[in-house]
Amino acid sequence: MAGVLLLLLILFKHFVLSDRTQRMNRESSNLYFNFYQRDAEDVWLNVVPNHPLMHGTIYESKVVNRSSHNISNWKMVIKITKPVYLSNCWNGSIEIHQKTKGKTIVQPAVRLHDKEYDELKKLKVKKFCARKKPLLIYLNPGDKIIYYPDEEYSENIIPAYTGTDYHYTDIGFVFFKNDTEPMNMDFDFAKASLTYHMDDSISDNVMLYVFGVLFLMWLFIISSMIRLKIIKTAKLRDQEHDKQTIEQVMTVFTKFIDAKDIHTGGHSERVAMYSRMIAKISGRSEEFCQKVFYCGLLHDCGKISVGDTILSKTESLTEEELNIVRAHTHKGYELLKSLSSIPEACQTALYHHERFDGTGYPEHLSGKLIPEAARIVAIADSFDVMSTERYYRKGLPREKILEELKDNSGTQFDPEFVNAFLKLVEENRI
Image 1 (cartoon, rainbow, N blue to C red):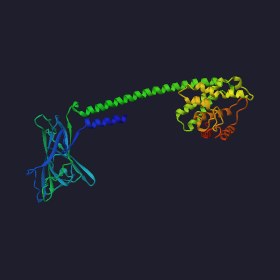
Image 2: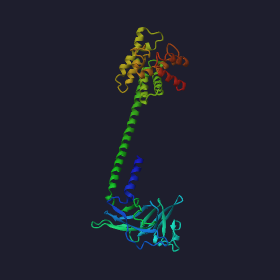
Image 3: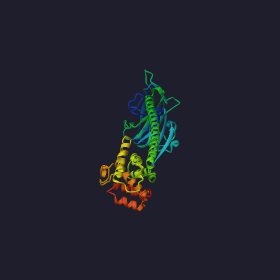
Image 4: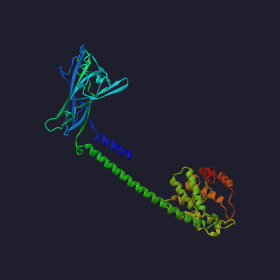
């Protein structure tokens, strides 16, 4: 946005505040200028002694103000396209840019008819005789001359059009050429241009209104973006607050579940943490990783319906008791199915005991038919169960647990997520 504002300011300066430029023969409602050659000999054309082939030609131009505003501070730039000698000009001064040996020599603006040869000796000035007259300044293609009107004659101000007559000013140049024929209009003014300042009021400048509209549009866009940014920030803040609240409620809820078995305290939180790490290292989106975390917290919520005597029993469970324990998957599904913002939660509660080869429960799903979140939580759940102490056994050594995971990759567990978990172990993140 700062770049857009800078561009608008640059364009405003260029089109509204800066001087204007008019090329020769270009139609314009502001001004017009052209060059024409005098037909007759003139007193300005000094004879070059002993050089009968050196012909001089006078070119005149009228700079006409067609606008309803004064034109001031104008100058004319003429680019040289053919070899020629500049002898004189009138009603103004000339600044000369002459290229010599790869360098450009600049002669500040001077009135040529006031200058002698010695005063311009840093330029290429032709001396044909001892009298040093006429003064002939050699110009090559690529050189240029800049004409400035005389201020003392008010030639630098061309009055506005009054409704009856156009005001104009005359300027002229004398050029010489060493040839058997006069120049005959072969001097090329096609690249001449005139830069000027128009003394118009700001209210008359159409471009000002254009840039005013663009600036207002820019302000509207900026204010809209700021407003959207504020709304988005507030929304993200609210979402983060809601997320923290949800996590706190879920954590409290899972503590109630885990409290039914003092030997599994913190189990759900650990499974949630491991599950999120597996999903993240597997390249899943941040949103999915967060949902998997919630699934891990809630995966065993159905155990709230299982009696304490069964959960704490040290002997082998009867078939009836096993069926009650296994039913916790359906109970968890029923508890979570109304949680529409996280549909993966009820699916994970239902399917986290399915096996990759289809021999699990409750529906004997296999492979990719098992929801992805459930396949991830199954590994995290098994790892935590094997690594913590239970009523019926002590926690297994880490090497034994990793061996179990590897041996059951492709049968009980999804190989992709087993490899992801093993990578976490190798990096000492678990």
